[in-house]
Image (cartoon, rainbow, N blue to C red):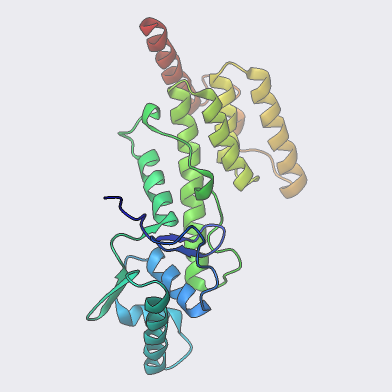
Length: 259
């Protein structure tokens, strides 16, 4: 027996709800109240019905907020039955519903786990690189948007270092430059780029990357790179770079012995 694909919620780069038995066309034109409810349940593990109603409809009396929640739940059940579970005072997504934001969190958690090495890691798919619900300006969305942005940035920078150690320099560079693309003025992302070039032995590339960042920083903010960035180009002055380079050299030596 072939199982139907699970219902999927997309929040990165825009809202969409794709039903498990759908032919492939996602539900995008849901009422805004229904979209907000699905997004709220997707982003929070707190199922308390009172908290959900108060957060989604903060500017109306409590009874009106609960009435709006009941209406949104009724509409959602009509177009996407089985998407939510309601039990007493709790409301949550059904267990089988997949959410792209949760997949991003799972990927980042794996990357940031110190027990996991670069051999077992991969770059995030393009679907996990989008902005959370662009155009939505609710406070709970803004907070989640920044949290996820920071989580992805830290994970990309950590991933670049781990891929260097695994000798996967091309993917390491892609991870580092993905972080730079997301936040061009973030020094830690540019440090990841420089570390990748240095570990691969491309000193000229590392210097070019450093100079490009230094010029952008000077032109945009009128400041210079921090000593941590400057120290990357002076071996022995910045232990973090030396540690990554040493691990990369050990990985290359292991690979040479195996071959």
